[in-house]
Amino acid sequence: MKINNEILDAINTGRPIVALESTIIAQGMPYPKNIQIALAVEEEVRKIGAVPATIGIINGKIIIGMTQEEIHHLGHTKDVLKLSTREIPFCIAEKKDGATTVSATSYIAELVGIRVFATGGIGGVHRNAEHTFDISRDLDELAVRNIIVVSAGAKSILDLEKTLEYLETRGVLVVGFKTNEFPAFYTRKSELTIPQANSAKEIANIYNTKISLGIFSSILVANPIQEEYEIPKDKVDRWIDIAGSESQERGIKGKKVTPFLLSRIVELSKGEALEANCELVKNNARVAAEIAKALHDN
Image (cartoon, rainbow, N blue to C red; front, side, top):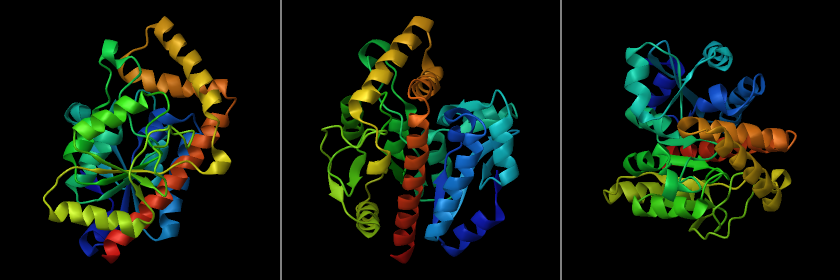
């Protein structure tokens, strides 16, 4: 494991840190947008007064606080592994490059004491999961990690109702940031009601209360995309239906499903979905940095 000196100093001195995933670099966005957004998200965290820690694996070594050169490496390199927690040992032992998903990033962040993590949207229960059993490892990982994860809800391609049910079953507290409706990634609305918190300080207090009670699981902070970048639900559903049908026709399964669907939606939307994705990720980074600072101040 290699911990960036700035991150190590922040851990040792208790400064606020925000963990960031690397699948957005290797699988989530096309080049060169992937690198541009990864660096922009780090800058958003710094503007608020926290330290960004982008996490990934390069040549079998876990990197916590990737340098610009390391981000460029993951953004350019082909055949980077998409890592949930279970693939981390394989990636390290085989000295491969790997990009961390929500589950892997959560595991590594908690390992070194980082309490806040910003992502775009978590994985969850896929549509038709009753037939495919396709459920993201993200959900079970959130159930066993003591961190705060800020996301724009779950990805719109998922079955959001079943995802929330699964999180409830696994004991993960879902809290809306200034909303009582679970956001659906590209859109703010899902008609699924969740508890609401109106400030970073409020979320920090909830987290500290949970720890004091000995309740060990993550808090998922559902932060809706800004209104000016929101895409109407009917448009998103139309793109998802088309992309979903195409993925079934091509026999795409497992880890390849989500990258294919998101990439195809970007194509169908003529870039509108990519722009929305970029903006919601930066927005989540800002909120995560505010929460990290509130935890530090407490």
